[in-house]
Image 1 (cartoon, rainbow, N blue to C red):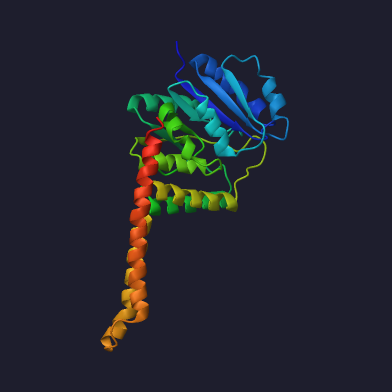
Image 2 (image 1 turned 180 degrees about the horizontal axis):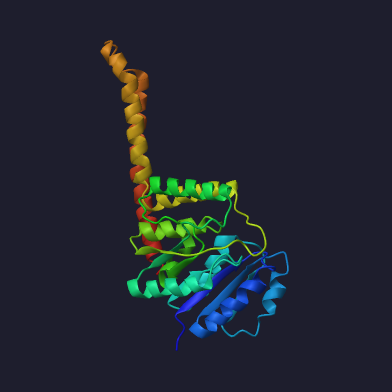
Length: 295
């Protein structure tokens, strides 16, 4: 029977956790006829040597980067190498549960979804600092783009492989990948669902997520919004400057001073922002045509 699912594991300096994660996962894959792709993302520890000990596993494929490309870069390489109908990302640090994969796959098949996000709500495996950062990212994303997915940055995501391959070229190589790929699927009107999952603390190693990661993610969210719906940024800005200018000008008009130079500049600036939005919208349409032609 042809395999239906490939599990993609991005691994960077995970020599301590992989010996615990892979045996259980590979055993499950033999039973379910799933494939596994581990992307060794230029690890500086013994990750490469650890992976060689699993070389006899028929359902395991190892792809190595000579230099570190980043979390998103590793996932993108994994997706490019997938040959099954579905693929799922699975962290190498031991936080994800193998049983959740089967749960999400069943939902994927039953609902004919395009992307299912593992929802970690209620789980507290990460620090309060990281949870606060994730909360801020979610709030900013929801302000900029209407979404009904809670855990957009979850590392456990199952994709329709063809769609995932279609969009990887415009996704970042950084940790922001998790958020951006979800927003792309939503903005393109694909069926995106959530399924509650369980997570535990890391088996070993240390997370590289910090303030810099959160800042990069916000920038990438704005970039994607500029690609798919730039008017959502430019129209509010245009209206904002128009309102501020009007508030500034009303007292002067009441005094009979007429239209001030400052107000004239403000209104012109408001119109210019709106026109820039229209130009960005047209450029976005061209870029989307290019993306859609890459199927």
